[in-house]
Length: 227
Image (tube, rainbow, N blue to C red; front, side):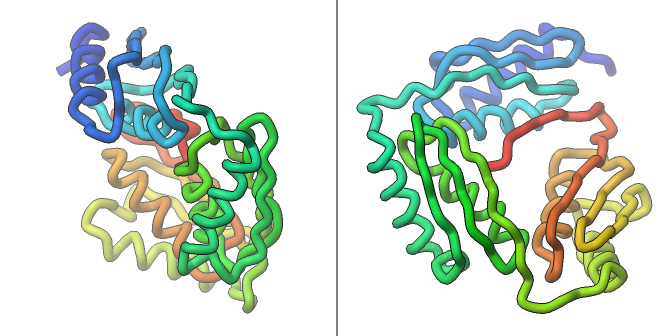
């Protein structure tokens, strides 16, 4: 059954209001040929990301254009934001021993330094996204593993992790590894399967970066959300 744009829009609005993490009162939605466009404002950067992910999982949505503006109540200054992020990193068991430096200018957070695993790079960004005053995060962290893992071993581990998971079907997923960079291509039936394959690559030992070019079979859900 092919859904009309109005039917998709109705479900998008319902999803946004259903998700208790999102204040949807100031979010406006437009749908054109399956592409959902979000405008308006939300009270935090994390809420902006949550809204995008909520819309991307709605049946019939093929693309998300997130134009939401973050409007903080009692906007903190950059130094307060930097101090908050640094404390959140220090309190995180997986990150506290890593070489992570935080700079903030005009609400734009820059993460520099190095971490020993790729998942720690993405985790650092997620931690930064949760702080007040953040408008965007530029992640310049480099991944420096404590030991060298061959591309073949990485590929085997990623494939095995996907095969073990109930949400993904390895038959339609291609895994390639080049110099520690995992490249995922092929198709999956849902956003849950997409995220499962992403996690399988992200959490594997020795991975330096992940390029996820998987297509969700209902249509490519294009999203820049990373928190």
